[in-house]
Length: 486
Image (cartoon, rainbow, N blue to C red; front, side, top):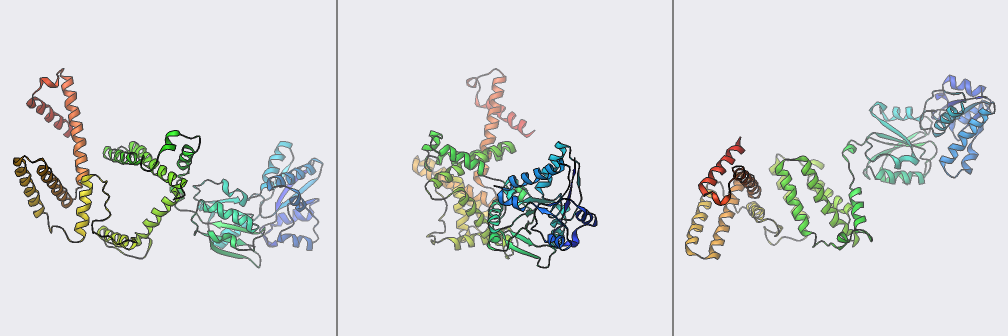
């Protein structure tokens, strides 16, 4: 039985080959090249080194997997036949070289003696030219395998074998699924040779050049935020399946109008989870709310109106546009100035000029929340108190008018005056920095907790509600309050 020795021809320049590798090349018989399309091969010819190449196999194979398997099998067959084969590959044998992996596996199985000499690859030159230390983390992959990389890959990426515009186009499409279209990438050609080039281009322009060849690689800088990325695809795909023919009958019957009540319910359940300060519950309820958004987007997409991606893109663009102090060159002093800028940008964005300063507040908002927003908008145009003292007076005035209305016995008037009291209290809350909707919701929850404690106390004493007068119940209520404070 013979043996196999694998060496690398380096990244291109003949001077990058080690002395040990050169000695092996000169004495090799036979010397088999994976490909003769490499700058070093011209030096081999000039120095009268005899060799064979597997370039013909590339013309016969259906795909690279088949081609590499055929080359590896032939190398091992020759060794099995008693030849001491020297197999030479571009670059370094241990960097992005598929045939070497196949030969290593086959040699171990067939017990063929194998030796692999270290060598320089294009990678060392690339790191040198870019000033990149591989210690920070780099992933090297063949262009054909980029699509199989994890979506959250955060390391820098070196893509080899970008040898024509078609490969570059496929690479661009794969990368655009995990990087921004405008992300900068570096096209590296003929590293170490006299016509070496390194060109930085936006990702979307990657395939617009025509000078790709077998010595072309692409460097994609690390994505600093990729670990924070996520995908809506699983949820979007499930919803598409539910809405498809043969999916769920209930889901297929829904419209934007029929789902209206559910999105309102989910919002309140999210708020409840926020009040509970339970992260697991909040996570679950946010998921339910997101489901409603995806549901509406799916129905719109079926009608050709917009897609979930349009929803994401629109709100992303809006956030960037309305935060020029973050994404632009505007400076702000504090949060109040941020709000002023936000409102000014909103006004410029509106194609239809509002008829009233109070336009744009949904009528379907909860009454307390709507009252707060009406007061906020009115205040922006100067319709507001200068301080909190007259606000207290206004609450007292409205309470007095409510008391007077109750003496009239007119339900309509009483209702009007009660609304005025609540509206005045909402305004007081605004001056105190408290949203009435949030405050009342907190009080509702507090009342619920304490009432349930009273119920438990009545039951533990073996009593019934009808056996207790208001004084006894009030004592239990005070006990519940004291327990809660503790």
